[in-house]
Length: 221
View: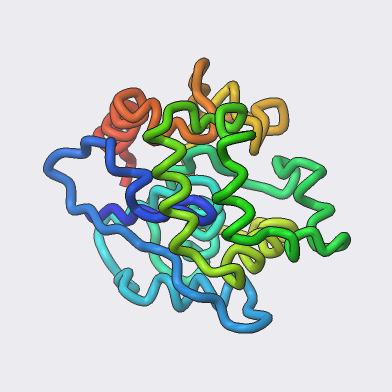
């Protein structure tokens, strides 16, 4: 079995660094620069070029936007299981604010420098509580381009879930305290983390590890 991790918007593989998945064939996929006016499907095809077209037991684990891209990848690659962490599985689960981003061109305001310099004011409310977590957030985002950040936010704003193969299983792990994708909008998540928020894959890594281990051990593929 092979596991491919996809990070959230603006992040890189370090967001998964505290997970402890022993004896697993683990791979990390980090963001690439989007092409001008590139669709999410075309972007996903370029991003997933190293994932085999055929394989035994391929699992994608996506955090936030990484979970959305995982669902796109499952449309053209044979993916047995998708594990969503702090992510959504339909447009109904997307908060109204995000749906306004493209119509109001709010994504044009999303710039690396501003995001990094202001995290000290809003970081704790968004689950980046400690100085270590805020520094990690800043370092990850600082490595992304404004073009990528704006493309990603716009793409999130207009995303509609594709029709997935019936053979692809989805497990959704949601945090009750998540302010990015509020639990009240999530339709029947597989797991609710009572004290989990949007950064819980890092902050609550032992709990998330335990769930992932349990899901993989009880897999039906």
